[in-house]
Amino acid sequence: MSRILSSLEDDKAEDIVTIDLRGRSAMADHMVIASGRSARQVGSIAEKLADRFKQATGRSARIEGKDTGDWVLIDTDDVIVHVFRPEVRDFYQLEKMWMPADALARVREAGPQPQ
Image (tube, rainbow, N blue to C red; front, side, top):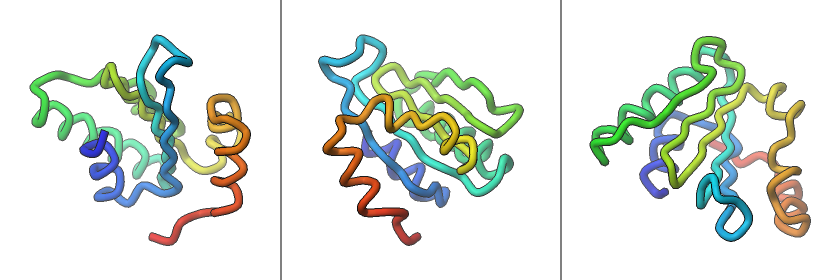
């Protein structure tokens, strides 16, 4: 998980949120949601994350949506990473679906983190 977060931070992903899915979903242990400023940056963040994951583990991550760059999903088995353009992220509101209400309130109060 720390390698994934480091990769996102290195590539200037914004508003990174982690959600613990253990005991709540069989699909993964964690979900990470982040934003890129443009379709090009979203695609680049996802591609570099997948490359770094393969170098570190020898396994390939599955990627969906990289061609459009609005919403890219990177599946590393234990961690599902969603990288969005901000307006697409606002529309789908995955945090609202997956985060406990008290944790979501804290994230909203904190607001965007300066980069």
